[in-house]
Image (cartoon, rainbow, N blue to C red; front, side):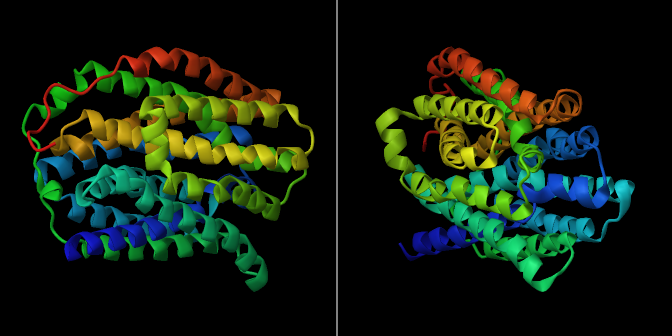
Amino acid sequence: MASETRSFLLLCAHCFFAFAALGTYFPYFALFLREHVGLTSSQIGVVIAISPLVGLLAQPTWGHIADRTGSRVRVLVVLCIGATGGFAALARAQGMAATVTATFALSLFLAPLFPLSTSVMFAALPSPSLFGRVRVWGTIGYLVTVVGAPRVLELLRVPVPHMFYVASGCCLVAGALAALLPARAGLRAQAQSGDLRALLSEGPFVRVLVFTAGIQLCLHGPMQLFPLYVRSRGGTMTDLSNLWICMLLLEAPLIFGSSKLFATFGVARMMLIASAGGGVRWLVCSLVPALSGVYAVQALHALVVTGLSVGTALYVEQIVPERLRSTAQSTVVMVGSSVGGVLSSTIGGVVVDRFGVDTLFMIGGAGALLFTWAGRELLSAAGPLRARDPAT
């Protein structure tokens, strides 16, 4: 019992600092590229696509290494240390070439960090139902830095790139906390030769990959380019921070109580509800002319994160054997964020340059609603994989 409590507390703290690092980076990266590097919307779309593009190789590779070696915690620590260096390099980068190089280096470690962290959580926790209670600390960490970072920068009058030093420190702490996790059987389970090929031939897993790629194609680009939307409505960096507060305030209680939500509605249905909510959110943003009119609808972000990020992780956990947990979680994130994300960010930047930001958000919203309808068949057809581990 003491070991389980220790694991739970360490995972909560690890999640807090890992997502705190993301909160100083993700919401403001597009603005950093526009206003400090001087890129066009198309160029921003290309740079933002670097992370998911690198993730095409990095996420399944690191996940497969973790499963084949059974050293999931050690691999997670390595990723945290690598992300620490990547953020520090990005803080020092000047000019387009240096920024692209630093973004590439950071993505090698940051892109696979979160799916591997998810797999470690499922392996270290005594029950998947506790996942939401750990993951909620990621939302809290993200909220703290989203709210605090721009205000601290303004108060101390330090350059915006210094936010990346904060992210670097958070990743270092997250890695140190992960290294303290006690040993547990699920953390040491090893995959065998041929397991990956068998996983990719299973219909239920393939269908969830298709759903994830399709919905991220619709939702990812507008999310990445959301700072440009805020600027188009005359918003400031503080306005962007305030909008993120609206996104995250409901996210914490939803994720904390997600086990009851998924038990009531089912994992697949919650994923579909979330994808529809994301579509409605972007459609409303495209139609409302004033920034003040979109604050309330940002609360749908909490539904999207709970239903898609947490829901997809739970869905994958239900249909794969534990020896392939890291590979499966990394692969589904790779297909969604990398395949769907690369296309969505790249196409999104071009659409903004040629047709305006409102067109991108309208296309993304309508596409998400259409894909939600198609996704009913993809997810309802899924069942447990045949080759489950005896202990799971």
